[in-house]
Image (cartoon, rainbow, N blue to C red; front, side):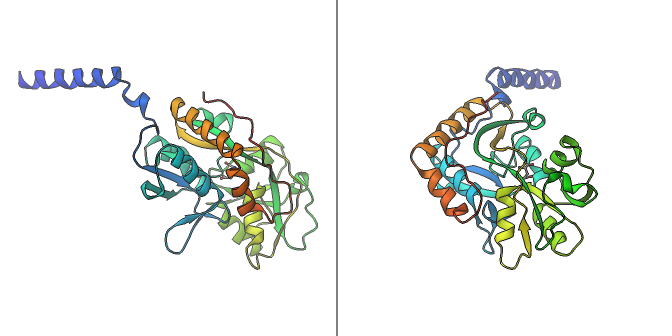
Length: 272
Ligand code: GLU
């Protein structure tokens, strides 16, 4: 009897939870603190420093948006994520929001709600300094190309462009660049902002080809279904471009790159 009552009570509680919105309302709105997923190995975008803090454009945009959501710097915690970890980290609640060079793609839209984009990057190619055999994406045919786990960049080459490169697996882009320098790969192809950060690193021995061939819309990853949170994020991103804060951050982080960095508000994708 007691067991039956207990089971009934649990059932009633569950129904009430669902009726009250339950999981569907898991939103960044109203949170007192935020866990933010960022990259930890990409200079200029998301980089973990020796003292455990994170720096970069993504970190600063995240801090701006969080501030406008009512969560100040003291209540933010940054969590380093690889490309492969982003969807699961949002889904299982390891993080509340992701700012991690995260391109909005049709496939990812099935799992994640995306605010933004807050920037549109372009995929390019990094080679060893002095290598003149790769001038554009079609030259990657037959070359050893880095395949960073969970990233979309290699798909742009071998699946979308059907360029038959030989994929060599790595777990992130810093590993790709190390392998390139050591001669274990011939090319690393991903977003220009990412490549510029690595190429600028002292003594990197690499150069960017500067033959951009895609649009990478950097989205703000939110738990699937958080439309309200997404709309708020889009309001604050618009404001960030209108009040000059975006320009300041873009200049701070990418002021010395030798390719065009867009400074106007990107066209939003919509929150559904
Ligand atoms: N923006 C691309 C992507 O989201 C490449 C960089 C990355 O993996 O973070 O797949």
